[in-house]
Amino acid sequence: MHNETDIDILKQYIDRTKQILDLSSPQLDGIKNAEEYRHVLTESFTKIGQLAQKNNAVLNRHFYPLVDNSAKLTSDEIQTLREFSASLIDTTSMENLDLPLIHMQAQRMLSEARERKDQREIILALDSMVISAYMMLNLTLRLYPDCDLCFRYRDIGLSAARELLTYLEKERFLALPDNECRELVLINSRYIRALFEWEDQPDKESVNAQDIALMRRALEVADDPFYRALAPDYKWDIHVFRTLQYLSDFTEYHNRHGFSAAQLKEIAGYTRRLISFLEEHPELEEGCPRQEQTLYLLRNTYFAGEISLAEYREGLLSVFSERDAKDYTARSMFINFIVPYEYILTLDKRSLSGDEMKKLGEIYACMAQYAYHMPKTGVLSFMVTFLSDVLKHYIEVPGGVSFEDMCLKLIAAMHPPTYVHTLSVADFTVFLTAHLLKREPERFIGICGVNQASDVPEKRTAILDFVYHAALMHDIGKLLIIETIITYGRQLPKEELALIKTHPVTGASLLKRYPGTARYADFALGHHKWFNGAGGYPESADIEHPENRVLLSLLTAADCLDAATDSVGRSYKKGKTLDECIAELLAESGTRYAPYVVEMLNDPAIRGGLERLVNVNRQENYRKTFVTLKEL
Image (cartoon, rainbow, N blue to C red; front, side, top):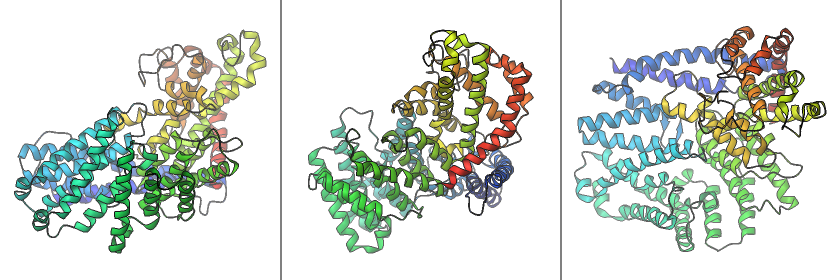
């Protein structure tokens, strides 16, 4: 292998991936109408298909052979992997592309370094493992109620970070081979706190004390002449600044980690020290602008009991009003999302004032607009992490934007093809349901107040309305893994496949939180489960007993009909014909699909209606998507 050739080829993968992400959600600038938008979107996904094919070939030839085998890597291959990973991630801003590949590379490099027993390579690999585990932790932290993946990445990252901290012992630090290794150990002495997620730990106060102690230790290292002498070129000012910033950020998400009153007073003191330090070092302020400093001070003085709740809320709204809504850098994204989220967490949804209701509506509209216009490269993963927390604590306001409407707006903003798919699945589901209501009304007993088959005509509208909204919500869990959904063109590593398979559980969990959507949770949970229960996912989905099983069976078939026949945004290649798709459904009657659903597809009249859905209604859904995006 020739290192220069391989890394150049892998960097072409990165360039194409950036193009793919941009093409997945084209902006409306210069697009005059829905037909033109449909044409642009279709053209974009034709390009995506071509780019994806090239990317897949590159990874199969130049990346997977290096990370998927246990053979000893050459020096050139190690350098290729290192450069490729460095190109995928900016450790200063935490902007990244393709997290699973970064994590796969880190695992392979650490394994290789341990095999070689090369101390320098081990330290470099441990640092890469910490960074990739942290980013995967942030991605998987959203996947409640099942946090196994999150805690797995946390434990991987903490294990690597703690191993690095052993080199902070003075005797071991003195023996480190070079300045780069010493600096990585010092960086990780403060960075370890980013991996602290302790929802599975019963004794939070002692864990929080350990968290503070680690950061206190990082500050002590900066004051110790021993370390200063051995690392004279290390950026000590940045070390102190970042450590104080981490301490100030301990109370994020309305003190989610539950620091005690005494600990909160200590944290407030560190925040004042941070602000004073930045006044002495204004060149560092770019890493923590004034608005962010104000947020830290507001939050930590509030939790320390130094200002009132009213003062805290007023301060948060003031910071939010000064944001740059068109700046999509990491620091600006932080202000555009975390500040309003902290405000939301202070509200009592049982007794909102008129002003609070109005402000909530404005905040939600701003978030949806920001999500749409934000480039899909860069800090998208962090933005989705904040967004997922907003959805978990969404407050529905009478006369305001419902949780369902907010989710649909966000799907349209983040990935228009998934929005088109959502609308089309709803159309297919309603169509199939309407026909089954005529053919076998007795199947709907127990649904929407139907006590006997003769009740169906009276309840028909209610049933169709119910199943329409249930279908709109079936893929809502994809919002929490949207950066995985829009990264096309390569085989799915097991980590990524596990992520994608979480969307039914996370979707159902979100829907259960709100009265307006709770009754749709079974549809989100069960739409990938086979009719006979023998296949599909998740295993926890019980499709035997829900009273709406017949509607779920209709939705499952509708989901397949749309996905298989769509040439845009789903398969990234030419969709199957309707006849080909129907033949596949009929072949899996009784296993994957309900026999009474797929048998209807033999009816020529029903096939004709399905053709109209594919060729006419889908175009109408592009129009609806265009209109929705124009409003953002």
